[in-house]
Image (cartoon, rainbow, N blue to C red; front, top):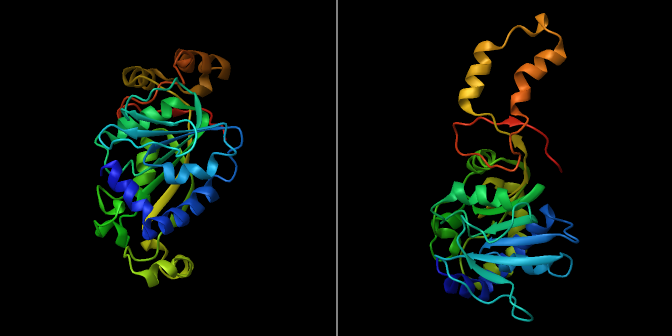
Amino acid sequence: MHVIDLRDFYSRPLGAVVRRLVARQVRRLWPNVTGETIVGLGYATPYLTQFRDEAAATLAFMPAAQGVVRWPADGASAVALVDEVSLPLADASVERVLVVHGVETVDALKPMLREVWRVLTPGGRLLIVATNRSGLWARVDSTPFGHGRPFSKRQLSHLLREGMFSPAGWAQALYMPPLRLALLVRSAIWLERVGAIFWPGFSGVVLVGAIKEMYAMVPPAQRRFAARLRPELGYLPQDRAGARFTGSNSNASAETPPAGRGNSPTKGSGQD
């Protein structure tokens, strides 16, 4: 979806209500960002604004296929047009990444998440806002949430774990129908409360917060070789067994994201 269409949607009454309802859940998952650097990826500017006064820096990265508009309206521009699989940031340079209108339409989703993993600090936080596969909003193409591929919670969990992220919190929003009727827009807060109680699985969007995990990668051939030769540890002192069969992994880089499903990571230490 083009950036002009996204901007126009959020400038209308329905978009303003969407921004308020989703921003509330974003804040619930990220209650304190004081002194941290936040990058928004996709079209995240409607939800970045609430953090500008407390974060050390807020940056908006918009994919080249989507286009770019100026943000914020006041002050110096903090937006850039980027390749989502080659972000213009150093390794481990930001504490938080917020992805909105990003996972549904990107072609290289897994490489994008690996790139997000690269730029996050150890224990850094990722927050994805994705269209809910079971919700009404995924079935109506008059809003941005009706374009691209929607996701279930299970699909998001699987995607995050493949990208070396650990899901750390869930939220849902948009229980009102995706219609521009004035009565529905005025009743949005009430519908949000009722929907969360009576039909929690049918929200328009699913939000998931995740933590960057650190792993020591073991090459598959080396892992198979070690498995064939590993003795019964009861016959060896524990320190010798550990040195013989795990020391070869000591040079693995914790800052190297997974190359694919073939490498099964051995979990190291994650920081909260």
